[in-house]
Image 1: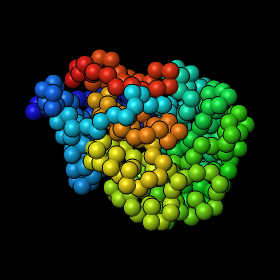
Image 2: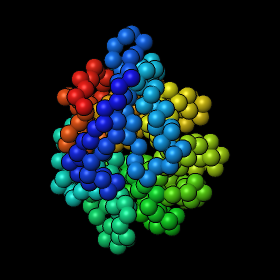
Image 3: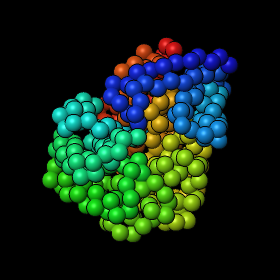
Image 4: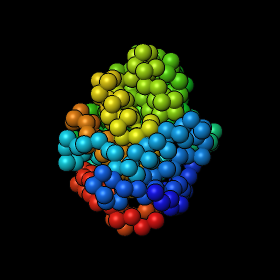
Length: 303
């Protein structure tokens, strides 16, 4: 195998980052063709978390990805914490009918909660308006809220989505950090709750299920050990699943896409639109949605 360090730039700040770095791994697939994996864990990941990411990268570099049952998947456009005009421009560029809006304030910054919520509501309303009739909007707080703050914020954001023309929020992703708080919020609101960090950071989906803490599972192949692991997890648990990327380059995104293609349609757009946030990439033809859908293709890697 060959190892190629890389750095790609983001066109907006995401999780406090302006670039993503890692290593591309070139191996050989079962058909003898080149197969590529990506190892790009976030800097704050533990050795155990990095180990799962390494396993995912090696799986892809061996070409050991799940067989598809579909030839494309609906994809959600991700909307970072940008102003309303920038958010609307992102929605209109790639034709997605679902958007995931980041809310709750930038990571590592102690926000003014009232001002942050006002900005979040304005962003959600703008995005929903840009999506137009039939569009769906979901929000992701990355565990930023306490249970009481989450309950109040979900009501305000749901109202903003309705003002923009949607039938409320599709779901709220990781409103609180702990599984116990997720379960408490889920019992208190009518909006569906999705778990991400509670699964991704621990690798333990069963704790979320035991606590009855989520309606939807957000599964990210890279930090969960690979596409095969995610497919097996989804089939075993039986809850609706959104396969999501972890802000990788198109090489890692392609492996995540393979997991989504191997699962039946659950009428939920997958979180695979992060290629739209890359200013540079590891391939010469970035993997971005076309008319709101993502399809596999042969990548021409240029590390």
